[in-house]
Length: 105
Image 1 (cartoon, rainbow, N blue to C red):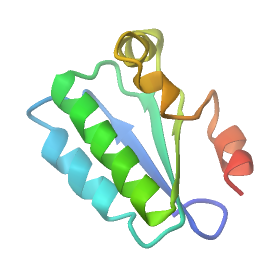
Image 2: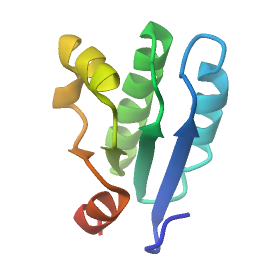
Image 3: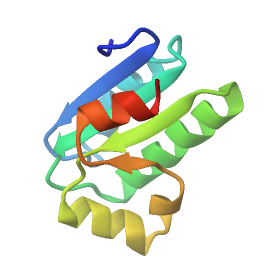
């Protein structure tokens, strides 16, 4: 849960790769009851193509159910992968968690 009611904050630590993507997907599904999902990526050094697929799934799921989704703190490497695949166009991204919480309030 987030600091504000209805916001689910998913704090991810470590890489999101083929080995960890199922755990990431399960964590995203656990947020389904909340109107907003904020994925904190400040401690994610790297994502691979399986992670990108999981982010697209999260986006589609949220869009279909009318939920809001935002990302927080992706590092330069993660931002570059999102930019090269144009996924950066799908996700509002914020530098800090308080910024994301305020924007989705």
